[in-house]
Amino acid sequence: MKIQVHSIHFDADQKLLDFIQRKVDKLDTFYDRIQGGEVFLRLEKGDSSKVKNKVVEVKLSVPGSSIFVKEEDASFEAATDQAVEALKIQLKKHKEKAAGKA
Image: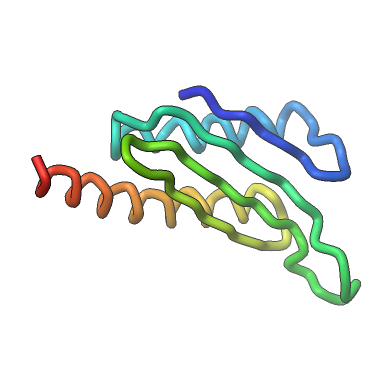
């Protein structure tokens, strides 16, 4: 699946980009009609004592709509894992809805 990764106000290393690509590619097993997606990586500013300041936003394009998830955690990898889990649930619901209409 073709995804674009945007790291806002910092440069993400290749290891992180590869990790995100691998995780998002696994979503194809739940719904094979994903057209593409965008991933936004952001460092949350504000309270420096806040540990969970890494934000991952994922927007997937599927026929008829798009699916969006926003997660934050102490690392981008952990936030990506949470986002992928949330996307799995949303994709399964979307697939059931689409099957009901057909």
